[in-house]
Image 1 (cartoon, rainbow, N blue to C red):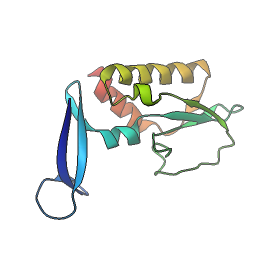
Image 2 (image 1 turned 90 degrees about the horizontal axis):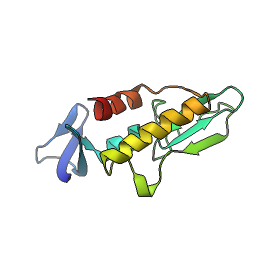
Image 3 (image 1 turned 60 degrees about the vertical axis):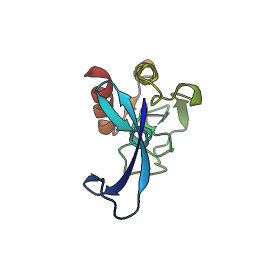
Image 4 (image 1 turned 45 degrees about the vertical axis):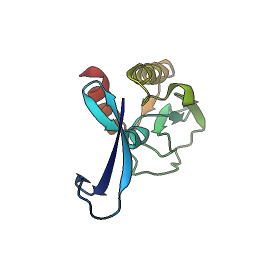
Length: 133
């Protein structure tokens, strides 16, 4: 179920008053949570990039920004190996089954390739909130 809300974004959250500039946000229900799709796009992993020698990797969101790295578009870590974790046919915000599939693919890939993911705190918290609760 998708719920459409018009909200004015302010630094401490969403202000539902009728002043200022408004953005349409789309909330999706995942178990007990209503989560903004934009937040999911920002915090869920879309691609893993890693250095094949050191096995140190970073995750990128659907907007190709490094997650938990201050929104950086590029990081020089000497790696050029990458793996996409989902496509338009199985977006994790479409349903809980796709979110679980993303989590399983993500964990299996990093374990199989022995990759150490840097800066993953926000993504772990989101997976915990959506899947474990």
